[in-house]
Length: 521
Length: 75
Image (cartoon, rainbow over the protein chains, first blue to last red):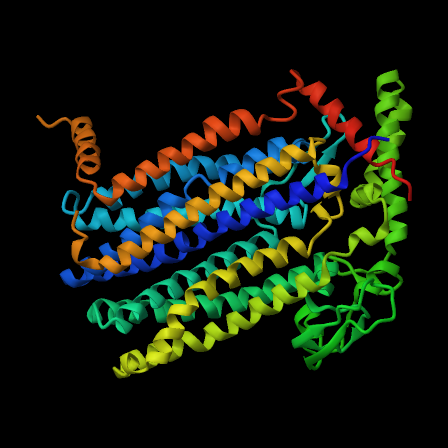
């Protein structure tokens, strides 16, 4: 058997995580702030008030800095697919390739065409055409995100494909099943709405800084009047779609849900943990150590949110490992859940059948090949389990998933209160006097980024070890490279992205300090 | 008669010429693209399969054998 250095898998994962986390620092501000400037320009278009033009141009400049620094950082992820995750890339090429190709074409034509009009077109094209270009830039960016998120959602819930053992590829048989899967739809709208929160927090935070400095009061108050409402709308919709996402996780990735809630022992009438401290002494899912040192639970809520039934049974890590509980399938039928051991046996059958199919096919024994193919297809839903060296690999990092999930929810709830309070005080004309609140408003900028990144950590760490849920684990997907070369590229990326981030922050801070007076370039 | 192509070229030309902060941003974008495409891509991120195999069949066989080998775990 080929010896695969396990640290290669860890370094390749770390490299992808680093790149994705840095890339995601730029994207949500583009999506969120983009809508805000479009709204501001719409007001200018409607009212003809030049103050709104000045405000729009100021925020547009900050949008442009973020866009310029962030553009193309996502391409590195595609390089990594081809170099570090070549088995995966080949295995999913057909399905992953289509959305990414559409994304590339859309991003290039829509964003790059209209963004030029947005920045160069003031006073050169009509107000209406300029406004349309601004909206189309942000719509283009949002639609680009759709395709990336569709590809990611497919990895979480592979649907609409058929595995072809001759080409070793999953081939798309139903484009609409891939595009309109409930996981994809929820993931897209949840991610976009959460980006609205970040854009609003940025806008409110920078405006609060102006108020703290007793500068640009008109710009700050007008900006807050838009961003606070938009931020509240974004938060409300994020909470709503977050519920939809969690419901999908409960149906399709129950281990992730168990990790999100630190639920080791399944139960009916399961409560949702509001706050909790996990027990560091809990080393394994099957030891008898209590997973929590302290926790505060909302009774029955986890059962309801997971299955829309307060009495429903929510399986914990132990139940999912041992199986045997009554499971409601996606088609509504009920079956006894398989244990991970049973899934490993089925996965092993699938992998063995693939090997024998290939051998018989090469020998020209088509009848035998067909019977192996049948075994492969009937066990394909567990294909990934055939690669697991140890069943414990199916348990993700529970504390990391639990804490990032709860941090994300807590920050989200904070925003649900924060934006209405800011809006109310600004309407009453007393926000300026609440300097402590202005200070908190500035601090909400990093808080929004933490919240956004936590969401991705929950989504990606919570589904480990799967690159494609149940079909392919990370250690089957990774290319057999030298670990040292991955360590080197990890370091290079860390340096490159840190320099880019430092450049972005320093240019942004300089432009914010400069203020909107010098915007007419 | 006005030439629409000339207008478009003029639009971009004037836009780039009048940039202030934009010049710094374009400098950063170009440096970044150079690093990404001419250093990282060429020296550190060759396509693993394309750099080893010519045909689609060879790539499929290689991935198939990799997966079969990795499936032979001691469980």
